[in-house]
Image 1 (spheres, one colour):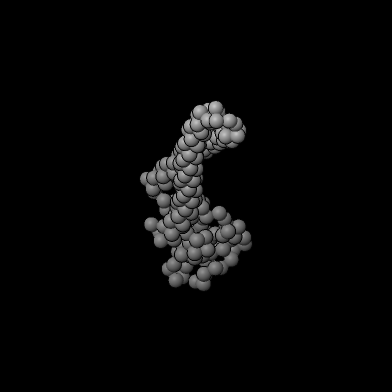
Image 2 (cartoon, rainbow, N blue to C red):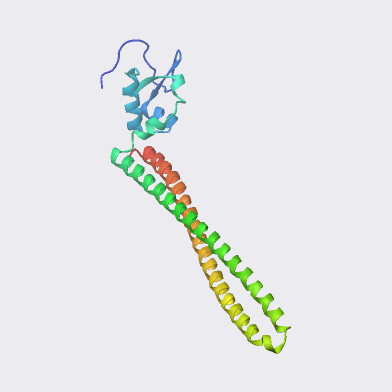
Length: 209
């Protein structure tokens, strides 16, 4: 590393001020910005900040004071390889696609449930009507007994259809519930992956990986 001999020379004590800038070591810069030392070195190279070697033979950088609190996301992102970043993007896209698929399945299950509910209501109404007719028929004379039996048969058939419709409704409700739980689980997993991704990047940046 070539030392810059021009201008003010930093002292042996770190943190010397020079106008609106501050002399500090790479380690101090990395600690203040929450990044690794390699990231700090790359930052100095990109910004073309002055570097000098002090009396203690430690290289110090003249850092503008207003740069000590900059957004460090760009610095931390330097520690993530393109392959890792691409894998994270692909994983996020796959999770979002899975959530969209589950939501579509949930919508279809809910539509099926509503249709089953309407069918069950119709069958229940028919069963009620058949039962009313059966009650009326029972109050008639013996000559109407045959008709009453026939109406009873209709009632039994309607009740059977009602039970079948109710079974279909329960299946649709269970499917809708399962799809909803799957969609919620996928959404939580997506949020967790995003949080873990940010945490992993910060950890990697801290460790200098």
